[in-house]
Image (cartoon, rainbow, N blue to C red; front, side, top):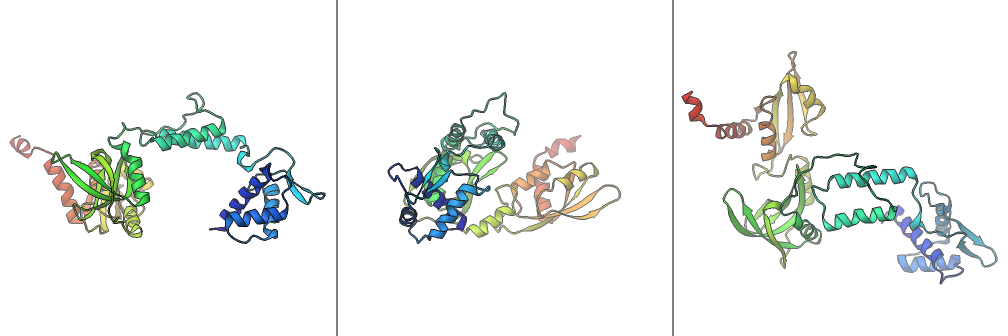
Length: 338
């Protein structure tokens, strides 16, 4: 455990000793004995002395604990009612924390589950404050209607943390069919207001992504858990826009696209991805860019929504996917008759 966590644990124990009315005159021996018992390690008296000094004087801790030493009893005590658990916040700290809570509330349309809501309430109760519409609500985010299946969020989240397989019923929008799936969930991922669970599917014998809005009746099942290589998958997620890769290979592809003059400044100030580089700038305002990504359906949709602003040039297979989507979205026969 890092030294700062060690110190934090010692501060709490020292505070509990000084606040314990049953220990009337805690001596250095009492501190050392109790610390070693609770932390299961040797603690030197010099360390305890440094901790007491830090609790009294360290501005980064800001406890300013009123710890005094009695020569008569060779013991330590609080000279005034005090506990590090009740250190008051400054007005600036309180304002910052309330702004953070305001931000949490602004995302409530995405996920406001029981535990999440309770945590926010506890913070407010601790501060003895309330967020009113008159004083807060400075942060406005895009809110989406509650997603079907969000009620399963906590169950799935717990299954991921505790490595428990789930039996789910999955609905396929295209086929309009229900399928029973045993899923070994490893990730919950949000994209544009919708939540997805990613994990190994026994029925498909591969890693699959399922939208929470298509999941019904999830229950825990006793199965040997099949987890994912987090190092590899964390790398994948950094190189993906969205959640649905087009190919199972999950290989990086260099995608080149030209940006029309009216959109070039925007795309330069708001890159599609961290990998975006500028290959060429033309005098007429066109800009040639490149990103290196795992092609996803969401990336295809990104380019389709900007057909008048961006022209994808390569690679050919990715361009063909976009062209097919455009072709299938229009009635070619009616156009030819005209």
